[in-house]
Length: 465
Image (cartoon, rainbow, N blue to C red):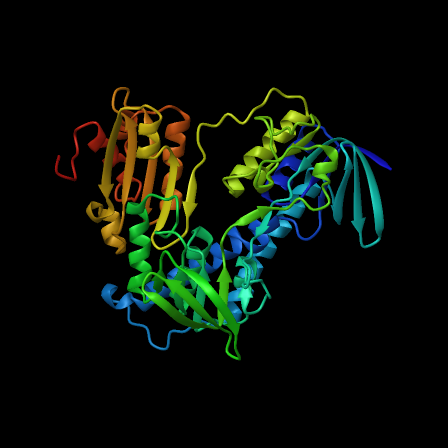
C-alpha cells in the first residue's frame, strides 16, 4: 500500500485541475482516470463539438457567400478529413493535460478506482490492482448520458452525444430526441454540414428553462435551414430499418413518421458513481444521486470531496475547474470557499446564446426593482459588417443602485461576449461603469456598452424609448 496526501478520482476538467493545484500546494497527489485524460469535455464533448461547429460555421458562411461577393464552385465536405482534424485537436489538448500533470509532479494512474473507505482507494489497472492509502479523496467522476425506454443506445443508429461526434459519414437525415443545449448544438452543426434535421422536444419550447425571447432566434435559424421541429411531442416507437430507423412521433397535430439514418437521444445526464460505495460509506446524495457538498466541496465526510458534474447542476466544465481548485485548497488547509457571485454559461447554437447572473424574472422574485435595457445587433456596425445581425444584448440591473444583476446575450460570438458581464457582476459594477468604459470600434462588445448607455438614460445609437 502506497501512502499519498490526495487521490483524485476522475481526470476530467475538474479532476486534473484539482490534482495540479493540489500538487502546487505541496500535496503528494495521485490522479486516477479509467480512460483518457480530459474527461468527457475534452474527449467527447466540449472540444470535439466546438471543433466541428467551427468548421461547419465556416463552411456555411462560404455556401452563403454570394451575398458577400464570394463565389465558390464544387464546395464540399470531406467528412473523414474533418473527423481526422477534430481528433488531432483533441489529441493535442490531451497531450497538453498529460504534460501539465507530469510537469507539476501529479502521478497519473490509468485504471478503475473503487473507494473502499475514506482513506483507501483500490485501482484496477491492466497490470493488476493497486492500493492507495490517502488522507483525502476528491470524487470527480462526471456524468453520463441518459437513454429512454425503447431508445436504448446501440452506438450506431441510436447514439448519445459521444457517438454523434464520432460518426464515420455525414448522415443525410438525423433525428434529435431532446431539444436541450446538447441536442441543439449537434443539430445545428450537422444541419450546417448538410444533414436534414428533425428535433423532438417534450416541453413547449426548445432549450427549456432558457428565456423564450432568446430561444426564438435559434428556432428560426433551424427552421430557416429546413429543420422540422416538434414541440410538446415524443417518440412513441422506434423501428430499426436497413437505412437506419423509422420513428413514430406523437405530436399535437397527430402522428408523424420520421425516417433517419441516425437518432441522437439527448434528454439529460446522470452522475457517475459506480464503485464509489456511497451508500456503504454514508456519503450523502440528493434525490437525483448527485453528491452533496458544502462551499469547500466537502461531503458530509470531512476528508472526502466532490466536484464537477457528479456534484450537480449546472453541468459546466468551467464550474468544475473552479470547484477543483477550491477542493485542492481545502484539502491543503487553506481558508477557501466557492464564493463566486455567478457562473456564466454559453450555448453554441446558431446564433449563440449566453448568460450570467439573474434573469429579469429571478431578479423580481429576489425583491429587486428591476431596470431592463437592451441593444440589438442589427444596430451595431461590426455585426452588420459581418452579416450577423440577429439578436441582442440585455442588461438586468437594480433600478435604485444601478448595480448589474444579470446579462443575457443572443447573437454573434455571445460565448465570448459574456465574460465582460461576468467580470462586471463579480466586481459589483454598475451600468454607469459599463457605459463609461470605452470599447474599441467597430467591435461586437460595443453592444454591451450601448445597452449600458441605454440603462443610464443616454442611448446614442438607438432612439430613447
